[in-house]
Length: 161
Picture 1 (cartoon, rainbow, N blue to C red):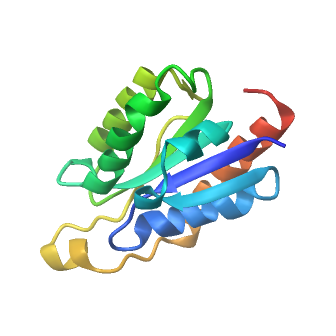
Picture 2 (picture 1 turned 45 degrees about the vertical axis):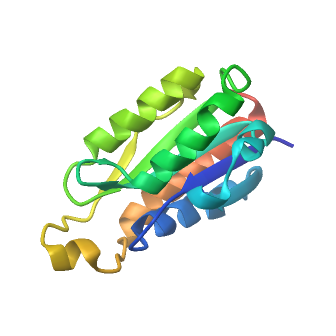
């Protein structure tokens, strides 16, 4: 059975909720592994057939912990995961575009195949208090995360990627 790996980082819970929603839906279709960025490594990437990367945008950039995951794993898997499908989700306070671009550039270096445009959930957190507060992602936004997980899981299970 194909395996989907979902790697996420969160400080305020938004990205975790998004990743968990995608994982719950994907499990209906294929074997799914959900790991925090700090707990995931090259062996997890090598064992999986496809990926969802989920992270917050911090200060208009990919979160440091997610970047650290990519830094640790980049060279150990380079040339070994080419052509595998991926999608990404970003939890952002404003636009999330730069974090999505950074992840896409890393995936391009790995020669992964983007199978869906980035899913960006905007929390509109703009004050220090709102930015640091625990997030609650609205159900309709979580539905979009579920759809992404379901689609990637089904695609892996059917071998369409």
